Length: 196
Image 1 (tube, rainbow, N blue to C red):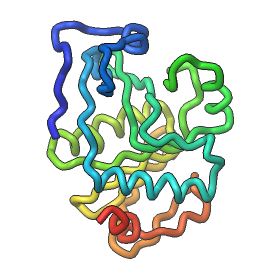
Image 2 (image 1 turned 135 degrees about the horizontal axis):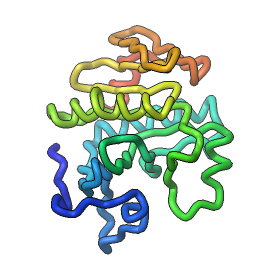
Image 3 (image 1 turned 135 degrees about the vertical axis):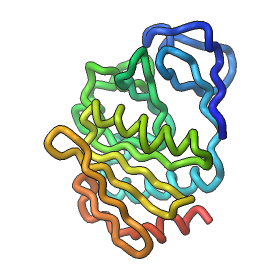
Image 4 (image 1 turned 45 degrees about the vertical axis):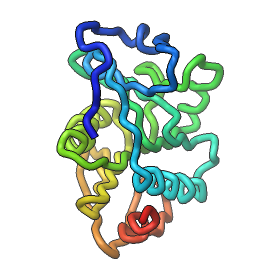
């Protein structure tokens, strides 16, 4: 899936992005000030994200879990906002969101404790999830960033250690270990098989 830039000649600020409404149900990320239409997810990616949401709900109150319905302001050359597949907020993060006009985690708010992205097919998507979002989420100090890759049949968990991410790659029947989701018991194959 290739991301389409909506208005490449117009650079937006975070404030302009947060108030933007083109009258459609389209979802956009803000990438270096440019509005980029988010592609429709594959059924496989949606199923995997839903499975993880239900698994996380065994460990956290549902109010702390966001499934494709939240935005995160991240650092970049220019204004940047991401639309992650799955987010687990801290209690402080949830309190900061209460009463807000939009479901957006701004720079002033506490970072989520976990963000998960399911990689879509294509090198552009792979670069976005493994390279760009990894750097952006690290700059926010997010405790864990999960990269679920159905094509590579692996899950990479980027763990926040001493100011940077250290990656642990899980494959096959390896049980996934999380410092955030205590007692998470699924293997990579169990997660990936759910969507098939």
